[in-house]
Image (cartoon, rainbow, N blue to C red; front, side, top):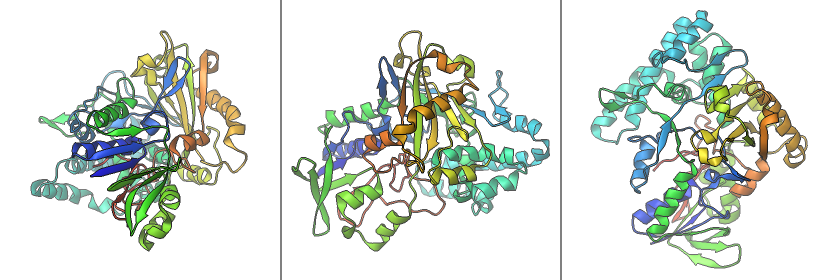
Length: 484
C-alpha cells in the first residue's frame, strides 16, 4: 500500500517509519528545507540552538520511547540531567552532596514547617503513583492489567480532583502549592482545569536530581530525564535516515494544500503546484482546525468530530531569545536548565495569556544551555543560551514583529537576576516569536507543544470519519506526546 504523510515533524517521521517497517511505500511531504519540525535546529552564525529546553523523559534505555525507537534500530546517546527551580522568594537547587531521593521533601519541611505533615502525606501518595506509572509503562497482559488495577486502588480517591484541588488537599501554603503546579505553565494550563493525577506525573523527583537511582531490585521502576548528546534533532535525523534507507521518500520544500477525497475515502493529495499524487492511506499533522478546515473540508466530517475540533484547546505560543555568549552559564547557574517563576498565581497568569496579554517575563521564564549536551553547537570557548517563556499567539496590543526587540531586551534584563551582566557577554542573538513558529509549522496559530491537557477534553482522534485518513501530531489525540 502507498502512504502519503503530510508533515515531517516527529509525528510524521514516526508514522512514516512504522509504515516503512511494515513494508509499505511511503512519501512524506514538508514545507521546510529540513525534516524535524520544531526538532530542527535554529542556526545563527557559528551557533546552533534547539527550539526550547528539551529535557526528555522515557528515552533512556529500557524506557517506552527508547523501546519504540529501538524497533527502527535507533539507539540514542543520552545523558541524564535535571533542573533547578527558582520561585519568587525561595529556591530549590539540588544539594551538592546527594541527600537521597526525597531531599526536596525535607528541604520543603524546613521552608514550610506548617505543611510538614502534608508533605509526608503527599510523598506517600507520590510513591503510590510511581507504582501506577510503572505498570502503565509495561506491556499489556492479564497479569500487568491486574497489577495496574491493584496499584491504582490506593490513589483512586484522588482521581476526582483537579490539580489545584489536589495541591490544596495536601498543602496549606500557596507558595508550596505553586511549586507543584508551576510546571503546568509549560502547557499554558490553569491548575483548575487539569486532572489532579497529572501533578505527580509532571513532578517526577528524578527530574530534579539525576543521581536518584532508577532501578529497584533489578527492575527499571522510575522514569529518568536526559538530553540527547548532539541535540534533539538526532531523533529526526535517525528516523529520516531509516525511512529513506528502507525505500521511503521525504519531499522537502513541498506544500500539500488538499487531501483528495472520493466517496468518503482519502485517495491522495494535491500539492500547491497543482500536481496530484494518489495514495491508499493519507496521514496529516499540524493544526487540527487548519488541516480539516483547509486541506480536508469540514463537510467530510461527522458532527462528533466537528464538535471536537470546535472545543479542544491548543496551547499558546512561546517567545524565545537565543544568545551566543562568551562565558559558561552552567558554572553560574549550576545546571543547564533553570525554571524561574515570577508568580504564585498560575490561574491569573493563564487568564492573561489567553487574553493576549504578554507578561513581559514577569510571570517567569526558563534558562537553557544547549551547548551543555552539544558543545559542538558553539565555537570553542563560547556557549549557547536560550531564554524562553510562554506567550500569547496573538497580542491584544500590537504585533510580535513590532515589539520583539523591546521584549527581548526586557527578557534578557530579567535573566540577569540569575546571570549577572548577561547582555555584556552576548556575541549573537536570534529572537523567535509566535509569528516565526506559525511559519515554521504551517499553522495559523503556532500552538507550540500541542494541546492544553484540559481534564475530560477530547482531542481530535487519529482515526477520522474519512476512510483511510489519519490525523497525527501535536494536536491529535496524543496531545503532543509520542505514542504508538
